[in-house]
Length: 163
Image (tube, rainbow, N blue to C red; front, side, top):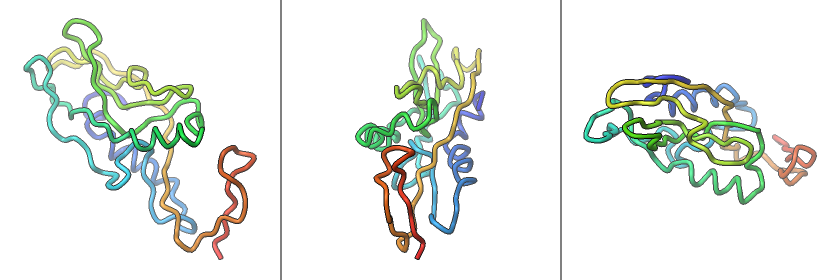
């Protein structure tokens, strides 16, 4: 992901990427972790204004909080060393330069600067950045049964039965 268009389309892009991992034998739906749990496509569509200038970028949100807090609670925040949270952030870097980013977990720490997508000065994009992993959050079929495991480590992963 890089640039203004990638930033504006990031929630859809990340959810679509997560969808490539959907196995319909076990799950009915998937969303990228950090997206809105009740409506995966919900996002702040209002344009982000900085210092009175319309940046052409969508505004920040707090959609990531439920997933982030739950992953912390289950000690699963470090399931990968780095991955996107499908949620937007904005912060001042210095002077009139702002980083506009997709939230990102790096070595168990929530970070929005490392997940930086664009740096803007007014309407001008002055810098673009890198990508990361996508972690799916699956809606498991009602007919599945957990037959063993607690899901806390790879060695104690849930074992499911589709019968």
